[in-house]
Image 1 (cartoon, one colour):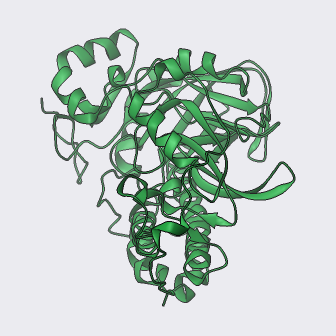
Image 2: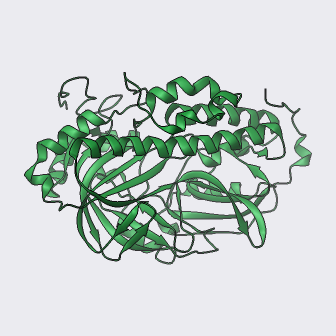
Image 3: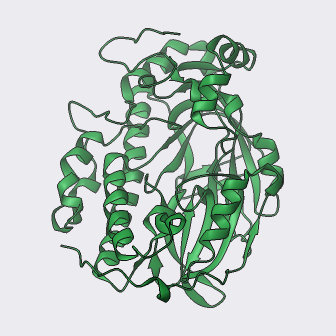
Length: 422
């Protein structure tokens, strides 16, 4: 069991001093997100901060926020989808294959993926991550091993996706997953995280942190932290690391299943977390660097920054900016809420836009319409000092969650192709 501490008196918390931070693309960031960043750097454990150009309001730390803290971790500054991440697989094939064999690729996405908050496989998928001893030893993680096993190789709802597209490589990509020379290739891109397991860990340890820091003002409560010297902090850190390994395995299974179904040769790929915390050196001191919706962009580090279902994504190489805490944007970033998107867009308009771009949407939500997102080209321009683009990914065949609340296109596959509904 985790150690429970009595709330610390409010007089202990000095929230008057702000750690230094910098904002990229401030003109495109909503005031509420800017205010959240201003609060975060006032924490007594804050060392430095940064706000990326795709930023928008979240809980506690804004999405797109980066925060370095002293020997402490903030569960909600990591996010509720711990280790949400990207994975790109590049095939040794032309993207023209998508047009020549569209049914093959559509069927691979329909049969080899599952979407939705509660989605799982009836026959659990296998991966060595499920042999990790922490599934038995960790006091909180062990309760969720079974659901984690069933959800391995699935994607959530919201902005999670699996899609095929054309990758235009301008500069050679050298990664542990293989070398990709300049050229144009068929590629598979996925966005997902640690599923129900990560959500449960985030909520459990956030509640512990909030009880420990109950004296924080109301608008600071979602920034409650755990000391890494305490039992609860050490437990969360271990659970976060396990969630990171699980999320990576989740993508590996998704890609393995699709690759096996297609039987096409693979050149290589790129992957990265964008909801995580790392131990890094900041000005000669060890710090816990939280990246909540931010891509690691240390010098030479590779990452994937997606746009939307109707906009390109990018493979990038970090430039190692100390001011950004070696970080960059994790996507285009929302420019409106899901509720606003449902009210503003309709499927006739969205489908017309996608069709004009040569993009087929198998399933998805109207809240993920391209117009709900910022201009990815502007976001990339705003962070030209943080990353250099090596390649552009252009979506062509997209699958997202097709079931749930709000207007949806398509539905989750349950043995047969789902009906499209407006």
